[in-house]
Amino acid sequence: MSVPISVHHGGRDLAGATREGESWNAAARRVAATVVGEPVAVDLSGETKRFAVVPDLRVGLRTMTHGDLADVIRWRRSDHVHKWWAADGEPTPERVTEQYASTIDGMTPTRMWVAEVNGRSVGFVQDYRL
Image (cartoon, rainbow, N blue to C red; front, side, top):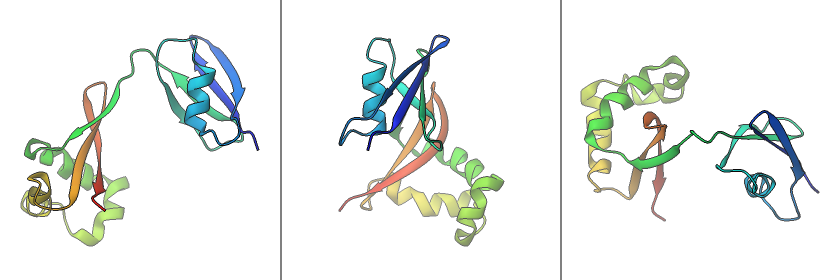
């Protein structure tokens, strides 16, 4: 079943649909193949999956360092984040350092990454060695 895809770029919408076995992201890249930049998901909740190409947008992941722990504390204290991490206790500098230092140092099978948008740290993700 094909899914409608829309990619906004430069004041216009490019329209297309997924092909059999194709991901929404792959379809958006195909639909936007004639423009410079990578499509980024804007709204995937509707029937039409909406993407946009913003040439100045840079999104990436980098390895977390000890220098990122202040941001982790700030993020974990945010109301919309804290409710999911409340069971881990108050995110004090001591607790967060104790919780993440060994992972940052590569002593566990978990890897920590910082998500950045245009060079600004906006969150973190982790993955686990299988």
